[in-house]
Amino acid sequence: MAAQYPIPQDLVDAFRGAIQAFNTWRWEGPVPMLRFAGRPFPFYTIAQFVSVFDQDMPDDIYQTLYSLGNGNGGPEGKTFADGGLYLRRLYEDLREHRAMNC
Image 1 (cartoon, one colour):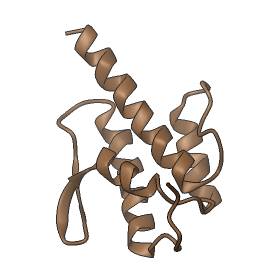
Image 2: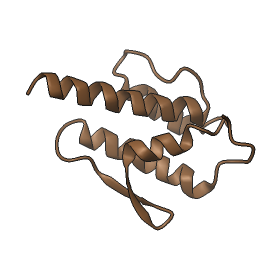
Image 3: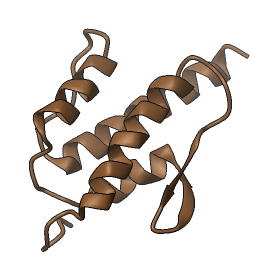
C-alpha cells in the first residue's frame, strides 16, 4: 500500500546511505547497519521502508541504483517504491548466490 504522505527527507538520506552500504557490502564483509530514527537497521530494511512511497526518486538515486545492475537493468520505475524493491531484490539475489557458492 502506497504511503499517503511525502517521504521524509531523513528517510531519503538513509536510503542514499543504504545504496552506498549495499555497494560496499556486495564485495565483502558483514551486512552494514545504518542509523535511522535513532536506531540501527540493516541497509535492506531501509530499502523496505522506502518501498511504500510512490513519489519519484531524485535522478541521482535512480541512476546510482541503475548502475548497480551492471547492465542487467534497474528499477522497474522511478518511484521510491520501485527503488526500494529493486535494492531489496539485489540483496536477496546476491545473498542467494553467496549461499550457493559456499
